[in-house]
Image 1 (spheres, protein in one colour):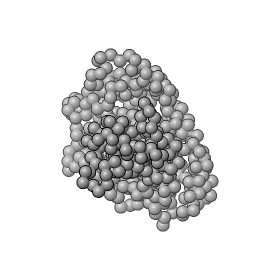
Image 2 (spheres, protein in one colour):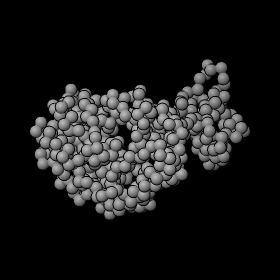
Image 3 (cartoon, protein in one colour):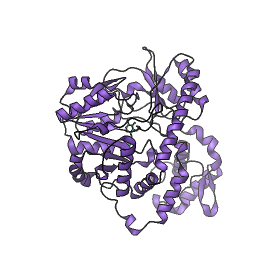
Length: 474
Ligand SMILES: Cc1ncc(COP(=O)(O)O)c(C=O)c1O
């Protein structure tokens, strides 16, 4: 809806000006864009903004106050009545059950608020916010004039070397800090690669099913995504070669295939690297959640096997810290560093705040990062086991949860004739953000399954209820 503060009031409207403002504020409260306790602008400021007399605003406010929508708090200003909660909540629109996937191909629809079982979000309740606040306060207190300047083009040196050391130890990648380019997220990392080494009209292997935004970004750069199937060993490299041996890039999720979570097997890793080095193609390794493996130690990254400098390794802090941080990185082969420095300076330089980078560098250097990942691995292992058990209780044998060695989500295959989209929409209407696998397919093959995350699932009852809802719907 239009922001009630900024759209001018209409003089020629049949309703008087105070009444128009009254309706706007009431509408904003009903729609939830003004919530209980929210402060309204002072009558004087709003009158100036809207170009009307102060008395007009005061009249609208007093009417809203007399009807219980607003509360005048003297010096503290006018606020939306905090006790409106019970009335306002049902007026808020329920999350729309109509995902936009069909309207905008390959965009991943997500509800406006975090709902149970939503994919791709780490356990936000378990992030060490106190430590983060302490590091933040220390940084702010110690800030010097230099810290107000633009951050260095490719990332703070302290962060780039902290990432390089972490990758050496934890992901087996032999890289120097100068090969690490800090970005604002996976889309920026992929766009960086596309700008630097790819060109319009080229073909790109993408996993099928696979992370839809990757296809969308490739298309925006004029590349043609070629869907390549996955099986229990991950990407079918042979099929990729048969379909498009001349592709210039393969975008893959080797640690846990997105969204099915299987691991790219060693023979397939080798075959992929052989294809890339013999045909001069690139591989983009999207290692978005490689740290989360429950039955054994995390596997080394694909980039650790790259002897010919064909792999761009893309990491993100969205899963190991939190997605709101918008911080990621790209590790480029040694021979590409100069090119990325040049391209990056013009297009991707200094794109993430200095303070965010400094805090993450400290978080890593002081050992919190490693501890946090270890804690999360344990916690996810527990939540995963509990969620599977509770879901299966609710499902009472009508479906089985697919087990995978790692990742952050579960897969529930549906019987051949059941369509996943109406079922996912039905569950969304019950406030559960379960996704339909068919929305992740790039080709016309569309096996039905439900995808859901366990990372934020703290209540087995909720998982059991989900299982029951699915059983009843089926
Ligand atoms: C497969 C995959 N890659 C990358 C990302 C991370 O992207 P970003 O760094 O933009 O948060 C996600 C997040 O959900 C993902 O699922």
